[in-house]
Image (cartoon, rainbow, N blue to C red; front, side, top):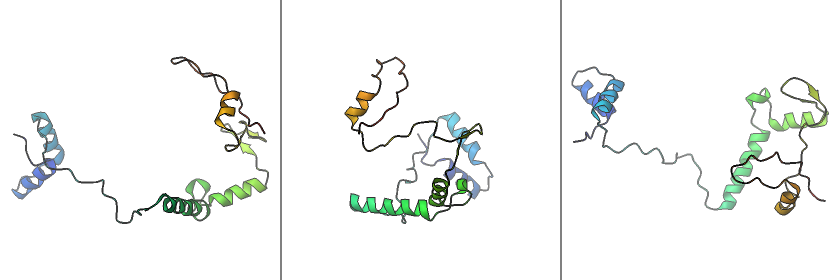
Length: 149
């Protein structure tokens, strides 16, 4: 017969009887004996009362947009020395900042060519990349993808 108490309740019960036991010891003994508690586990999937529920996708998108604005314009970031991302971005964009790679060498241009994400159709992109490898074979690195203007 399986116990209806888990290790936590058994420890509380034994402490009430005057026995001082460690929960981990009870867990170990239950595991060695092949016992498992039958009581329902705590329901941790309930939403917190402060979580917002959005009725429509439009409300969700507005809420996300507002949060992104807050995150990038009002919230200081520890990785940016307590500065806001928009401040750091604008100061770097206007001062012809140098890109420093992880080895400490200054580079004037980006080592990886940057490309637009919105102008290429998927058919054009596939036509400009190398053909896909057969299953189980290594793929070669994709060549430079540029949008046809």
